[in-house]
Image (cartoon, rainbow, N blue to C red; front, side):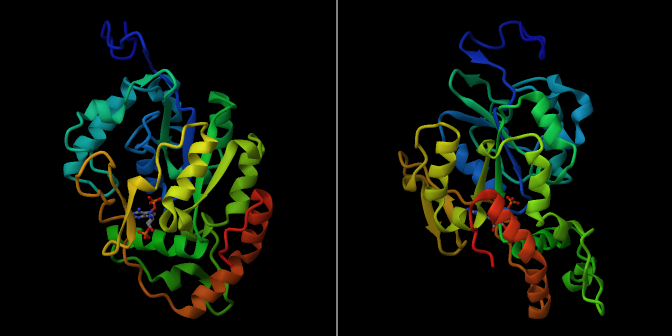
Length: 308
Ligand code: A3P
């Protein structure tokens, strides 16, 4: 009997409903969709396609709502997808044509399979570390990070695609342009202060439970970065260079299934947008601003991401 759906025999003997053992917690515009799609190629991973936003926006609904693979969350997500006809901007990954929605969204897991989700706002939401820790202190956490300056421009580009009338990037960056003061309350700037956000997580989780994926390397060497991720998750190295094909027109790696002759599948139009040209002085000022945060972040993670 499946409590959530109320359907008897909904799960067969070897399948179970699980909370996620690993979560992609950030960062927005880091390359989180690419990473999730790459991970979904792994036979031992079942991942939710949409962003559940459980630990930031839906926490009061309780873990049963969140629990995979079926139940209220699934219904909510189906509604959300149903809404896509009118408001598709947040639906990033189209469902594969053959998959039935419910299978694809909330897959049941078999023994040895990991359940995952991604919600990039978790990394910067104060309440989330304690909440994930309360679910399970063993949760593995993955953060895709990217040069905070390009990340900010990417973030701005996304917002502008939805609201074309917003002020210029330059205007939003500065609180007071003559005093050269950066507006750290603007989320596009704030999200990139990685060291600050990481401190919050380290109050609850040891560094060994966090993996930082380079958003830049995920593009230039997806197989290499995926080897690190699979190792971190304790999985066999199933996703390899055979799965990637660099598409020069798109300028990004696209996915292929080595066993079939089908065309490589690239992420959608909203991934890999053209960025506006930003005045070099503004870029320079932002670089200076982020320098100490980056330095601290490299020190904390033991890894120089090469942004400076
Ligand atoms: P841009 O659109 O600014 O280039 P997220 O999925 O976290 O929103 O991140 C979006 C970013 O993922 C894109 O930002 C793009 O640079 C990056 N990305 C990484 N790998 C990609 C891939 N294989 N295809 C498309 N975009 C990819």
